[in-house]
Length: 608
Image (cartoon, rainbow, N blue to C red; front, side, top):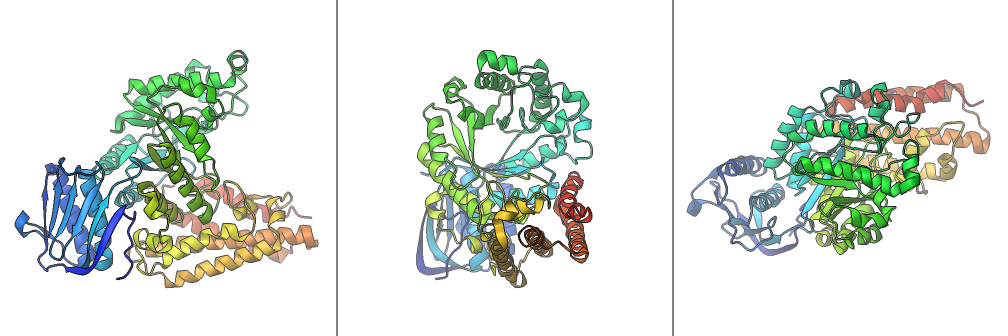
């Protein structure tokens, strides 16, 4: 029997050496669900059966139905669990709650996609490791996705049993009275959020509001109207915790934002803060940790007025463990770390001892990379899942950031999205996932799996250089380095450039074999091609600098002109591809950064 790919792979599955042939007049029956859910399930079943088998199954009476879905509280399963039985003549899905029945249907859909009309006789009993399995998507560092992009993403993630999504927000929600902050940035609107919230709910996904509320506030504080609220007005980065105006501003933002979400959770951020200017006297009297905690508690009180459970990034509290016991017991600490060796175990144990609920928060490793960092991504996700389970984490929140221009294209995050969905559902059975094949089939809709291999191998260009860099790939850093002040470049050396170019060539061979069946085929191929081209450009720039510093070979005018022409073509294509999935706001910022480190560098002829 051919290997059965499933995402996530179930906790327990038994497959017999027998098959079930789908009858030509197959139908389904649903019991135990409310009318609205039955309508959604019916449409869902009709669509995927038509796509997978060539004919849409119809709704029958129970005795005549080929597929029976039963939702009953008396069934002994986890609230999000399900049982899926395929016999020679019937398919049965049983669940305690409607979300479990939906997850059973998602698994059935994946089986039908591969086996078409001849299904293996099997039994699956499945339920998750983590109650909360989420993805946080950065919509503030340049890219704000189009609503169509978000809807497609929700559909894909929910089919992988992800049940929480957050849109990381700094300034890209259209707050009334604060137009100067988001003007020209293509923010999401209240109406768009309400529609997305309903779309998510229907698919058993909780759309959690997210607004960074302390640090990472520079896009507000850079404007004169808000500068007075900065901790350091000369370097406006985070709010001043001792200024009453900071709380008043946040109260206004929360009043506008939260009424558009049905979720009872709220991520207020509060990571990576820098204190010591306007709060210097308070710090002298109370200590930095105490000043941070007091402001955090004011934010907590605002969230409680809205009946929300506050989530916050736990990095600052980790620096002041003596204050952790003073936190309210109903907050959720988000323990984040994005490197393979992040100390999740030690940090989570520290939180667990206090009795506070917490999530583990790894990442896709795509930001600051161009094409991802495959090996770091996989190791980071496993590290978080394994140690989150050992220490009692209640949630797993995968993160996908967009630092420094958000140059990576969305498909490079699919490996992290998919593997993260797997290990957060059942870590034990998904550790050995056939990643290239699984992601190739279920993320890229490519039965040849070559799109999965291409994404995986391009993400390995990072390690091909032979050096390690934290929170970024070496070539990304090299691309951003000034010609006159190289650092990473000199560490990569010529052998590293040769290996990187070889890895790019190895990866792009898969491009010719891709057989994506969705209407995004050409878009995805173009995104891969432009990313590979930018990686090659980074190699060329790095080699030019190495030649100059190590071999005293100054670049020729012809060489510089060639690099300028190549960069212009890459940037023009970057603009086109950006607008396929994203809104125009933020594109100029992304392009300016690309031009600064390529075209401007070469044209200025700074090398003498």
